[in-house]
Image (cartoon, rainbow, N blue to C red; front, side):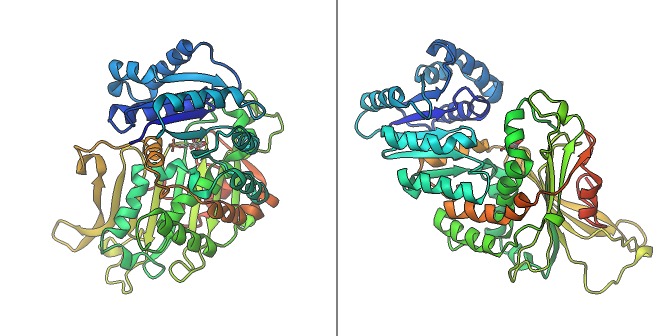
Length: 470
Ligand code: BG6
């Protein structure tokens, strides 16, 4: 791999500390970074001397890359390549000079990778700065969501981006797509013959994509107040999960083919109906430091989504996510239609719980098919049983990559397969537009609960799979 200069904007921020530096470190440990590289952290405020910056990073990398995976020697090698240079949307000259110097030092083949981990409203001015200072030239640039706040601002951001970059240079990251378990949806669907024939409205009667989180806002009041859970999670992560679940088989598993299919799919998704979207706010949110006393920002969303194409017509997709909920889960459930003829009844133990295929997308991910089976004994009595696969057991010798680690590697490999296109982002905002224009009333819910009662009603009689049947 050719030498690289990585520039991380927002280098003292939360994402850089928790994910980006630990991710790069782990890649180096696994021998997946180029032999020659420099990392220049950047931001408006200096974290002190380079030594002080490295010291703070050492603690973060130790904590977030897993202490068992920390290695002092690799850290020393890694840390000596890190420096910090301040920059802002109005002032990128010193940074551009530092990047040029690092590029000259590493030789003529050196490539630039710019990571923009900056607040949404700084994105556009930063892009202009990158163009004006020449930093954009021949660079690949990674952008953090949300990409704009609505359709109009996302269009304006894309226009600003395209004035400075070609689309091939842009990597819009949605880290959910970097999760092993999410890519596994594609593998299970398209590398096996038996899922696709039943993967449609004839055999599947409902889908739930459920991402409750037990954490609160964890000091991210500024972000939450300006973004809210709908923009943070629904228009991004949960729709991307829906994309992988519902798209048609692509011609190949590559960036272009997946983009073609996702484009078709999102064209078929019906714009959200605000009456079928529930907003909630956990009790006590307004007392969090940095939150407005009268804040109407949603920390919980449940939404009903319809895909109007031949495959999915009439199948409800229910999406739910929120903070301060009872459990942290990332569960996808596909519920199957019942057998056409009821040969068994309640006397045989036949109940109303249909077969479900359940993906748990946690680090220790599982796929489970829940079915009815004969309970051993003298009578033909039914009970529920599971076909279950735990990835850490099935592939005990494999080393999973953390989502950011995987996606950083893909940027190095110039592979946009797991990244989002400009067109897709705009379409997703279009789908969300009715809710942004006419936001639902915000209902309060107890911390540690499953959200407001209205969200339970949205799911109808069947309810949400998590937690009742977990
Ligand atoms: C981030 C959101 O993109 O994803 C957070 O901004 C959320 O609000 C997080 O908590 C969840 O990611 P993960 O990888 O912990 O499931």
